[in-house]
Length: 403
Image (cartoon, rainbow, N blue to C red; front, top):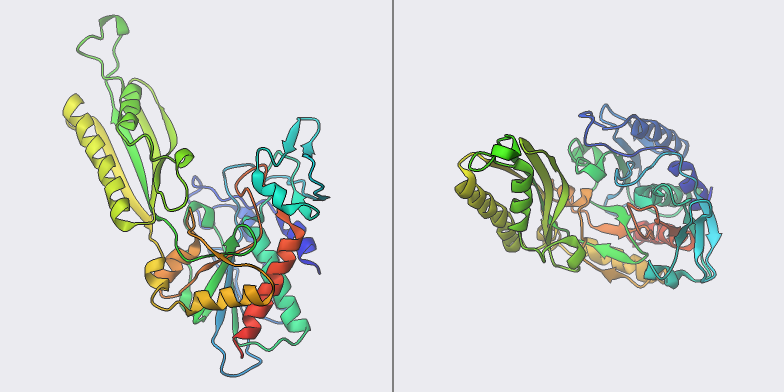
C-alpha cells in the first residue's frame, strides 16, 4: 500500500486529544486508531503489545542481521485540539503555482501570499483539506511513513537490527510520555517521526511551563464602587500588561522564547487566565517564570494579599542536554537523509515533542521530519513526494545500522 493511501486511511479517524476529559487516552477515537494500527503491525509480522489500557501500541520486528543496535520509531496518534479534526475531507491536488481553492462555498483559499512555504512545492502533489478542519499530518503522516517503511523492510528483505515501534496517544496535550514504557519498547535509541518540512532534524526543543492566574475580586454596584470594588477581570488584564510585551509568539522566532496567553475569562467577582512559557535556554526560561512571579507580587501589593494566585508548573525540558552526550544518534539521521538525496537541516523545535521527555527517561530520541506544513491549522498540507522520500529515509536509516 502506498504511503498516501495509508495516510488518507488514518486521517479518517477523528483522534483529537482533549485536556478536559481526564482520561488516558483523552478521547475514544485514539483507541479506535490504535486497534487498527495493532492489527496492521501484526499483519506485517511484528510482535505486537497493545493497545494497552492507556492506548499505547508497541511492536517489535526481530533482527535479520547481527550486531546492529535496536532502533525505535515513534509517532503519535492524536491530533491537535486547535482546529476541528472531525469529518476531514482530504484530497490530493497538483500545485501549479496558482492559489489552491480549498472551499469555493466559503471562499477559503491556500495561497503562497499567505503561506510563502507553498511556493517551494511547485509541481508537487499536495494533500489538503476543504479548509474547515486540520489535516492531521501531525502526526498521522509519521505513522503512515513508519508503517510503509516497515512494509518495505519486510517485503524487500532489507537487512536490519531489531526495530522497535511505538504509537502513542495525547502528545498534543503534553501527555504522550506519561505512561510510556521505555523498557517494553526495548530500543537503544529512537526517533520520533513528528517534524515539519522534509529534511528537518531536531534535537533541541523548548523548556516548557504552564501558568494559571486566578483573581478573586469584589463586586459591587458601580454607582457606589469607589474604594470598594476590585474588578477581577480588569486585574487579570493588568497582570498581563506587566509581562514583557515583546516576548510573545507573534514577535519571536528561532531560539527566542515567549509567554503565550492561551485564554482569559471572568467577571468583576472572579477571573482567570492561562499561559504557556517557553525558552530553549534554561537561564532565560527561569527568568521568564520569575517575571510571572514578580507580576503576581506587584498585583498583590497593590490590591491586597491573596487577590491573585499564580500556579506555575514545569512541563518538559530541552532534550539537547541529553542528546549532546552522544551525537551519533543525530549523525545517523543526517547520513540517512544525505544518502537519499535529502538536504538535512538541523533546527530547534519551537515546541515540544514526546522525544524530549523520552530522552530524559533514558531513551535518546531526536525528531525527524514528516514533510508537513502549517500544522494545527485549517491550511495544513503535506506533499506526497515528501512522504515518499521520508519512507526512503527510514528504510535507509535502518539499513545503515547494519553496516
